[in-house]
Image (cartoon, rainbow, N blue to C red; front, side):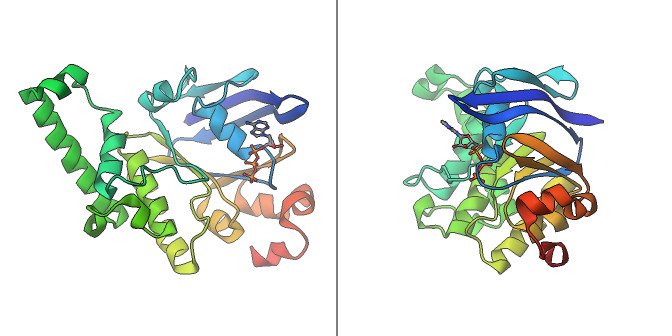
Length: 257
Ligand code: ATP
């Protein structure tokens, strides 16, 4: 079954066609990679999907229903969460508070409840905190919970961003270059985490330049170049495609990947 279907997504910035008529389908439970050279349109695709940019044409369907991408908030409520290429954390807040912020996107008690500190608000706050602690354990950051987010290493900040995204209970988690800035050991830990997230029922869409990681991790990949989908398929199909080798992988990478 298709979880996400993008149909004819197009986005221009002045004279630049960042995306031209991109259609792709992501199956429920897949790990799906979006790759391509710098400026190919990958982040623009994420921004259209998650309501940060308004696409000029096309539509997204989530589990068969038209996705309202009018605002990031609406997209989160429908079950799509994301992380950013340039990590966006609240640097001065604690690690735990950063995840709680993500969880609040799902909570019910309104601003008045917060001001009056009603019983319902307090119960919900405790639940938010417990779930955030659980998620920190899940990504391996429980011991760092009281430290400010800014004190974490780059790799740990990326895992914290994943925990915050998971706090919104997504069906689809979109990760923009999750391995960027990570060393080989951190990348290995990340890979295991992503496999566990998928095993726990979340579909993954990732933009990633680490060819070895995407080829090893993804069930299928789409390659973008100049805003166009060049090829879509399994890692084996993609790594042998002459257009992909020319545009992105380069000679000699077939063996390396
Ligand atoms: P990278 O791998 O470097 O992150 P990318 O594949 O994610 O690249 P995009 O960031 O989506 O590429 O950019 C696609 C094209 O759209 C580029 O030419 C970029 O300069 C342009 N672009 C993206 N966002 C904007 C914007 N807000 N305003 C103007 N042009 C933009």
